[in-house]
Amino acid sequence: MVNAIQTSTAPRLKALYKDTIVKELQAELNLKNVHQVPKLEKIVVSVGTGKNKDDKHYYEVVNNTITKITGQHPVDRMAKKSIATFKIRAGLNRVGISVVLRGARMYEFLDRFINVSLPRTRDFHGVSNKAFDKSGNFNMGVVEQSIFPELTFEETQLSHGLQITFVISGGDPKLSRALMEKFGLPFEKQGGKI
Image 1 (cartoon, rainbow, N blue to C red):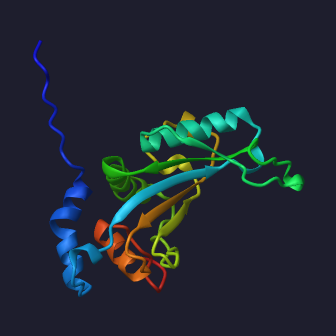
Image 2 (cartoon, rainbow, N blue to C red; image 1 turned 90 degrees about the horizontal axis):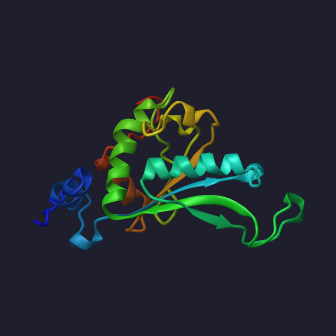
Image 3 (cartoon, helix red, strand yellow; image 1 turned 60 degrees about the vertical axis):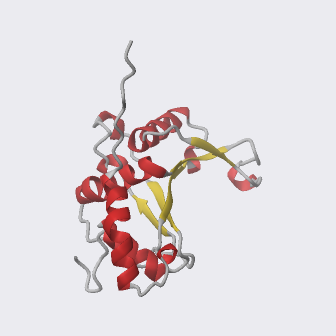
């Protein structure tokens, strides 16, 4: 029996980052060291279950959505505090589901998200310029999961949104925005449309 040799190719955006984006950003941003160039460390995709925390069907739909669009099994998020008015008890109630993507899966998800999913968004004028936090991380919400082509029509009948967080090293929103622009993320222009 002959062992099959697997040829693994790096994701397109990862190769682009290593080959061209690092050099371009270092020159454009006047950075002295290559290690000062911002880098995408991880992508966190999460869904809060909210008022549907006890609905088993809703949980299964959300779990299926996250699994299909990321290619990774999600983790349940439990309540950290007890809140009597919302009938939530610490450690007992499942308040959300999330996935942390790193490495090849992270770059593949980013590529599909920018080039396939975002163009399918209805009335899309670009992502917000104000979605960077003071550490340089970029957060955005997706209103409906139907923009992801991995899901069939039947799987999008129960509509829900999701939150995507791009964790970027560098600690500066300007550097992070420059990196995300190089990846091809379309930001809205000041006058409204792109």
